[in-house]
Length: 337
Ligand code: HPA
Ligand code: ZN
Image 1 (spheres, rainbow, N blue to C red):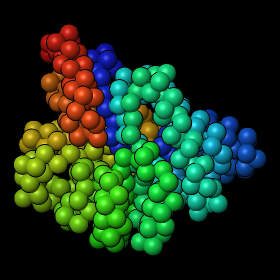
Image 2: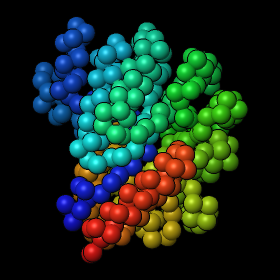
Image 3: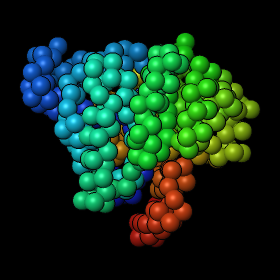
C-alpha cells in the first residue's frame, strides 16, 4: 500500500507557501539576510513546533516568515516546495500566500508575488507541475486592510486565480469579508475560505452563502450540523481537508478519530492536503501515509480522494481531463486491492 500511495498521482489544493519554510532554509535565509532567529539550531526550531491549537501555531508561523525579505527568498521557498511536489507525485498544486504577513514588515507586495510566481512558472516548465496562485486575507486584520491588499493585487490579476481567508478563525467569522469578497468576484477571482477548522459549522454555511466560495478549506466541523453535511454532499462542495495539520493543532486527538473517511463514505467531495507541511510533519505522501496507517482506507478510497481533488481544482476542461485520464491509467495499472 505504501508503494501505491507514493506512486498515486496527486493534486494539492490547500497549501500555504509560508508553511513550507523548513528550518534549514529558515536558517539559510536568516544568515543571508542578517536576521537573528530565536532558535539556537535547526533542531531547536523543530523542537519548538509543538502546538495546542491554531493560534499557538500561527504565532510561530508568522515569526518564521520574518526571514523572507527578497524576491529570491520567495523564489527559493516556492522552488523547494515544488521539488517536494515532484518527489511526491503532485501533478497540480494551488497554493496560498499571505501578502499581509510581509507587507506589514515593509516588504513590497510585488517582491512577494514576483518571487512566488516565477518559481511556479519554472516549475511548470522544468518539473511539469501545473499550478494556481490564491491570495489570502488575514481574517484577524480589518476589512479595510483586506481592501488595501486587493488594491495592491490589481496589477497582478492575471497571475491570481482566486482569493482566500486564513489565520485565526475563532472570533473572526466570514461576514466581515463579504464586501471585499464581492469586489474580488467582480474582478473575476474565485473565492475559497478557511471555515470549520476550529470554528463552528455556521462559519461553513456563512462562507458558502456570504462569500460564495467554490471550496471550503478544512470544513471538518460540518459534522456538528447533519443537515449541512447532507447539503455539502448534495452540492458536491469540496472540502480541502488537512489530516496531519488537524492532529498537530488538536482538531482531532488522534488520526484514528479523523472523520475524513466518514465524510467520503457519505459522498462528500473531500480531498487530502498538507496545509503547512514544514510545521505539521509532512507533505502530501506523509498525509496519505498517516491516513493509511490510522484508518486503513481501500485503494479505491485513496483514488477517490484524488479524483475529488481533480474535480475541485481550478482547471480548464482539457487540463482536468488529462489529470483524470492519468489517474484512470494509474488505477488500471495498480488498482487491485
Ligand atoms: N488555518 C488558518 N490559518 C492558517 C492555517 C490554517 O490551517 N495555516 C496557515 N494559516
Ligand atoms: Zn490552511
